[in-house]
Image 1 (cartoon, rainbow, N blue to C red):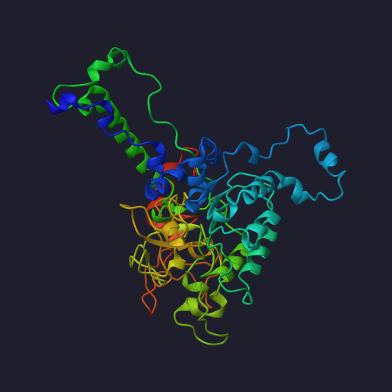
Image 2 (cartoon, one colour):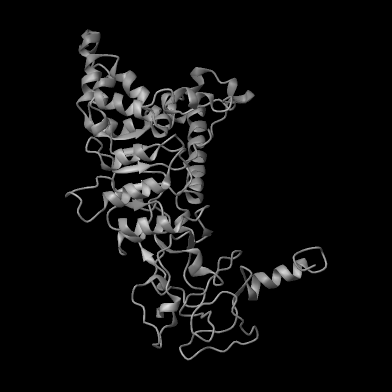
Length: 456
């Protein structure tokens, strides 16, 4: 009887969007998925939303400008011999960096006037026109607070000037708590958006289902056919996402050989060496024993052989992910395990984290995947690594040497010898022409003989 006397106003009203987003946890988990245009449009709907977004610094903590139309730098394919650039040069104050960095600089100026720029801690600029002057400002200037920066596959970048800016930022005489930048994505490919996995149209069977059929008498909408179809789609999407993460973001942990498509230059290796412990990258320096500073001088007998001065290598960027040595199942430098080895031995993983702007979050392996890795540069695995089956032999187990005791490209060795040296280091040839002799090279010779193949 009392229920019948209740008026509609006695029932609680549904939660509004404003009330929902006023929860800082919900707001912080939602906004990284929204483009800047959507956030600004939401703030323009009412003063309440405008105040909420303006007074919550974390709203614009993650800023992805890759899809912003005004950030795109587009010159027609046919520029009539550089007519646009010559027209810009009529203004003597416009430099080449001003021209190519104009779109982003305009966006930064707008964000700064709106007091948004100071709250950005993760900035994604992949594929855009980004100049070295613009990056120098982001790294050095006080009005930027960017901690994670992604500039993969950007256009019009002078890498040498960027290296100089990084070296200046990490100089010993720098101010305390500088630079603010802690992570830089630059070597890997930009993130590829996931293709839609949901069917574009329903089949004939599901098209005939009426809305009332989605409600069942034994449990409500969750047991309806539509809900079950959606659950299956979500499961398939989750499986596909896991597969793509396994093949993409965690490639460093798969011991599958070459990870970086283009090996960074020695200049980048020297820059990364200077930035160690300060700025992390989406690649790391090789920690192979030949890069160790503990080398033995000329004229002294080196033990092990890779400690000799003739075997020493300067800093190199690791480009290959390999497992433990085929013989000893480890490596002279040790296999790095996350949370146990120094954080400097781990690269930033793609994609950049959405809900955090720390280097540790960017380096943390995905749950359920391997958390151990061993990375090497090309020089450290030359003639040691099979490009087909990815087996390799470490410096302690396999010595590629001449009479001087250190690696010499093209040195001759006896194929038939299986003897080991005094220290247990094998002398027989393990890898030839990028293939392991015992398995892959023999298979290649057998398959190619007489069939116009490699050996036919």
